[in-house]
Amino acid sequence: MANDNETYRSTATAHIRDLSTLSERLPPILNSAATAFSQLTNAPISSSSTAADTPQARRDAIASSANEYFTAVFNLSKDLHKQVTDLEEAGVIPAEEIRYTARQMGMSGMPQIKTKDSEATVTNGGLGEFDIGVLNARAGVHENGEDQVLEKVKRLLEDLQRQTARSEQGEKMDHT
Image 1 (cartoon, rainbow, N blue to C red):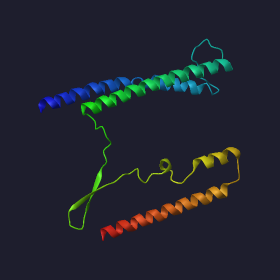
Image 2 (cartoon, rainbow, N blue to C red):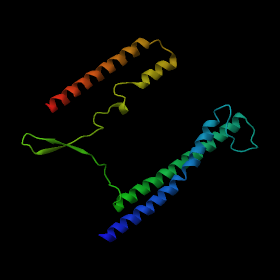
Image 3 (cartoon, rainbow, N blue to C red):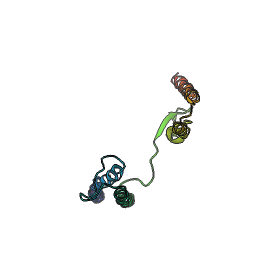
Image 4 (spheres, rainbow, N blue to C red):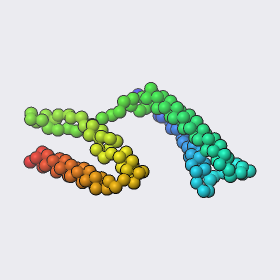
């Protein structure tokens, strides 16, 4: 038992050191992204002090910085996935997502375990029926659809109020 605990600790310690080393790779990644994005501004971060500020030089700087960025992100992602796989194989972290359950009392007085999936009610990435694409399209062409958007938002809020009222009524009934 003591040997298993020491093995667990040494494995976890080694992987924490490796993850710490991987975290040191983040500042250069962010620097590459900042350099690429800054080339699109009036005050770009220069990648070399002797380069002239020409459109071609900016294109080259964007291409170079973007290439560095994507290469570094790919390599970091690959190394992080390797760490996760190693930790799962060593039993330090679970291989599957843990779902928490709520206990409810059944008719017989015995607790019943009911699994709650918090993601089951999430639609459209948490936005529900709200369609960002339509809003962005209208904003891009400056359509006068404010009334339609306002009506849709009102309907969504009313639906949300009804759902909240139903869930509150359900909770009141559970407590009585």
